[in-house]
Length: 260
Ligand code: ZN
Image (cartoon, rainbow, N blue to C red; front, side):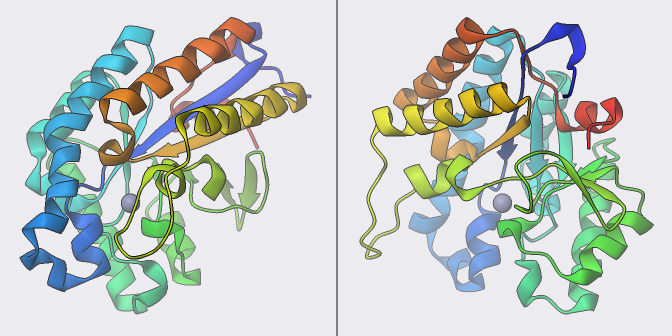
């Protein structure tokens, strides 16, 4: 059974994929000419990131933001604010291209250009999260070549594990705000109610606490960073800390702690 620092009974990571406009352009280059679509990402940079930074500071949490290189170039001031607040910045591709649709050469370019863009802001990322959680066999070879300490894109376990020699801090669709709270016109899906969303994420926390598992939640500023939803995140944190002494490490701190 894992012992967490400070005698904590729970270990939780809130990770934020700061995709801004690139999630749309990476999905379909035609979206570069659709201001209505892109504005959803612009909201993330303009409104949501400052809101989330304030919330995290209120709770004294240092967490992890995964940033595509092109987003770092488009919104360098926001990334500098994330860094100045003490959060970790991880690699999230360059153009937010889905790896499964990329050739090996494109995938190498995604990794290398992403590294270059983050380096201009003084960041040497320790961790990687693939856009849309799609990977190729080439991806892991590149991550190891460039000395990454961990990946956080897979679902092969419900606790940290090792894949091909690299620490994996696993994710899950049910623990991602996008399937619950993002809505796409014409797709026929619906938002999860605030009550059901909070209940789902708290149930996972309770089970992880019972099993002494480190747990990763994935969020997107443009999705979680609206008033009532940020309040849900606030409620979640307060419910967790009321139930247990919780360790909230950034992913790089989990890797340094030697979980897995
Ligand atoms: Zn993303």
